[in-house]
Each structure stands twice: as structure tokens, then as C-alpha cells.
Image (cartoon, rainbow, N blue to C red; front, top):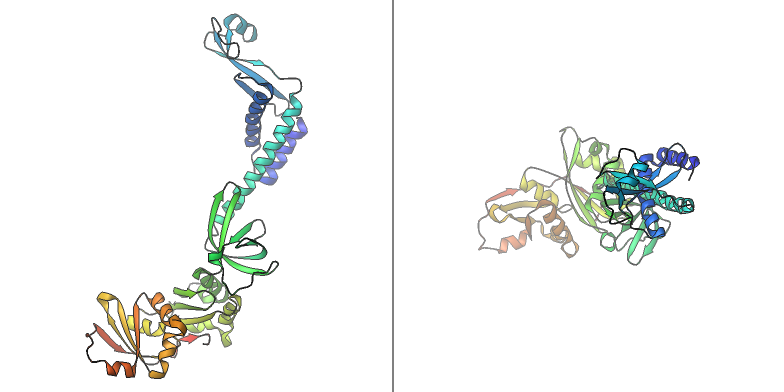
Length: 369
């Protein structure tokens, strides 16, 4: 190595953010191993790189003793005095043992160390960047399939979209643009591994934050999301400002805001419901697009009995029970739905804790059925 190499280390420090001293120490440690490997010695050696010239020197470190028993690690007091006048028993003296052809080995070793450290530093930088972006939305491009995983190019790194985070009805063609939600960032021996999702409820929340300024500014809050990815989502919203309609804000003028989210989710239906501190009202809202006649609750069991018009029963339950499932999930209540005629036929029913009639709620909005 030479002075140009030391200047190169300085350049790496500026461009990659890896301290020159860190690189220098790593190279010296690697050179110790290289020396022992190539010259088959068990000596206690040290390697020094002079910053001014880049010259490399190898020193054998020996302990001063009266009568040496191991020439590799010990030196007599008489011999030590020739190298370091004033040396006393127990001191450590250094004897230069730099081989003539060590320069070629040193250059090769230094190059390997620098390349490895640069790679490690870049991985560290990428990890630090993305660990702070967990639960965030990112733009990417579908690169390829690896077995059942879809590899997403995020620019500086690839992310993994595993089968459990994929929507079966979506097409992940290589080259297509896609928005994904960062679920987890892991440190591995091969660098950071970024797990992303298209099914996570957080994806819907982040999309609404992008489309609805009131959510981004905190004037409208997302209180809950229940999702069956690729089919339907219910999102409960609440306004901290009584002058702002939370449902209307999310729908947007002529439905443009919610439609943008629907388009990004490839046509997934979205019910936007008004969150309420009143349990009965919230349960009634959660069954949108069905209109609820009344709601009864049994607090101890956290169960709700809901009555709807006869012609609204199938709408309230939904296809294969989907609407009722999502309503139960977003409210946290078990919901039993019956029509008015079914209720009239029941005579032996335990009295609920509380019953409330619920008028048709015009403010509940959905993105079609």
C-alpha cells in the first residue's frame, strides 16, 4: 500500500460515511491474520500502517525474561536491551519481522476488508433508514417471483411480499408499479430483509391519510379498520371538530377521495362508518349499508341483538356473512342479526340489558354493494 491508498480511505470516509480510522483498524487486524496464515507462525504479532506514507510494518511482540523458553513469544534481557535500552524483565518489546513480499498480500487483504466494510456499512445505512419506516407506505416495482414470494424493488433494496401478505385476486406482473405497507424490517447476515404487505389494514389507513387532508392533519381520526383484503373493508372515523363531517371528508367531492383508495386496492369495496361513543349507534353504523331498526345489548357477554327490516336482512348479513363478520370485528361485539318478522316469532327471549331504537342513519356511506 502507499499514500494513494490512504487518500482513497479518506475518500471512502466522505462518500460512504465509514471512518478512516475504523477502516485502518480493520485492515490492520486482517493483516495480522493474513501474516499468520501465509507465514505459518504462532508469534504474537502486531501490524502498523503509517498514515503519512501508507507503509506497513509487522512487529513480533515478545516478553522480556531472564531465560527464554519459547523463542516465538519470549526474549532474553540481553537481546531486549539491544532493541530497547532500559528494558526490564516483564516488558514487551516489538521486533520488526515484515516479510519482503508482504506488500502484495497486504494489498489484496486490504482490498477485501475495504469492500466488506463498505458492504456492511451500506447494509447498516439501509437498515437504519427502513427500520424507521415500519408501518409506512412505500412505492415500489414488482421485480420477479421467487417461489411463492414476490420481490419488490424499493430503489436501494428489495422487499419481500410473502404469500400471506398477497391478495389472491391481484396480479403481480414484473415491471408493474405497486404501493406496499412495510410490516417488518429484519437484520440478517445477507443484509436487511424488508417484509411488505398488501393485505394489512394499515395499508388502507395510510392510503386514506394520503387522500384525506383532514386525517393527515388530525382533524379526522381513524378509530378502527376491519378488512378482508381484496373483498371489503370497513373503516370507522371520528371528527374532533364538530363542524367537520368525518364520513363526508373521507368520501370527498363526488366520491373522489374514497374512489382513489378503491382504485389503489383494485376495486376492494370500502364502507366508511361514523365512530361513536354510543355503543348502540356504533353497532348500527357498523352494519352499513344495511339500515338498522333497533339494537339491544347484553353487556356481560358483550353481545348485541340487531333487528332490521325483512328486506334488509340479507344486506345486513352480507355475502357469506361478510358484512356481519366485519361489523363484529370493528366493534368488538358479537352481533346477532334478525329481521322484524323473525323477532316477532320469538317469545322466550332473555331480557337484554338495554334496548334502543335506531333511526335510519343517512350519514353512513359505503362504496357501493
